[in-house]
Length: 152
Image 1 (cartoon, rainbow, N blue to C red):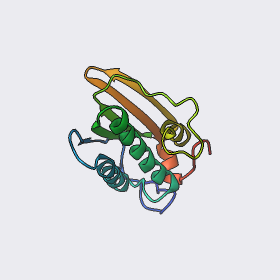
Image 2 (image 1 turned 120 degrees about the horizontal axis):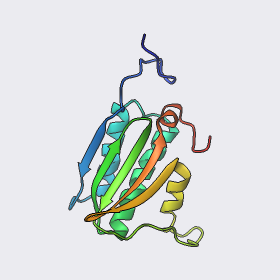
Image 3 (image 1 turned 180 degrees about the vertical axis):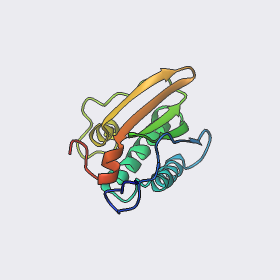
């Protein structure tokens, strides 16, 4: 017996379970737009689109890729992995770990990206590896289907 998805009554596909998608972005112009488009298509394919939380996940992709561009000479790869969570990973060539600005100026552009990531995601972090680092964020698959905000 197949179970139905809570939003549409469609049968649940194996969808994202165990799926991993990689987008090479080294030297590519328009990395943020390409990353968002790539993520949007994965969310559609995995039936995780059309909710407020899925839109939030696209914002997370934008923030992480933007931060790699601003602080690490660009994003090398964007990796999306599906399962019980959507895991978003952005690889860059810098070993400097991200940190929140102690007090970004209110209303001023910049300095708010990690605060946004922290509020929208269930978990996030960064790890140094040979040749750079990965900054990752996770959003529960159940939230992508239901559209519930973080902590909701």
